[in-house]
Amino acid sequence: MKREKFSKKERLNRNKDFQRVFKEGKKVWVNSILLMLYLSNELGIKRIGIVVSKKIKKATKRNRVKRLIREIFRKNKEFFPEGCDFIIIPHPKMAELSLAEVKAKFLEKLTELKN
Image (tube, rainbow, N blue to C red):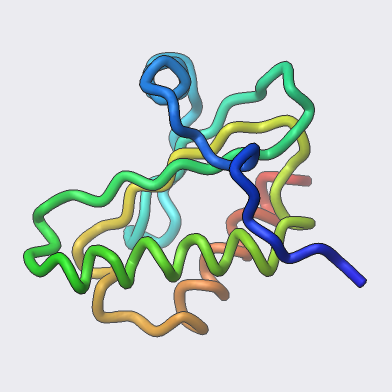
């Protein structure tokens, strides 16, 4: 049984870590619905950080977008490369999409990156 927990060690929390990924990371657009920045880390674990702009007007929609991204990460960790830090920045258009639509596009791009 695979572990589907989203533990604290899998989160990017510190400003220093975010700044390092923003400065040195590679940028990839996922079908113009979200921007993904990634950079390898020395920890050997995959970590994720989510940055949602206030261009998504309502806080409930911003929180929904964050929940969608966390759920995709939690359920599909095997698609993410080991030892990488990810920052996900959703475009305001993503607020109108369903989990299935976002998941399909996101995982397609991750499989391209892994190969």
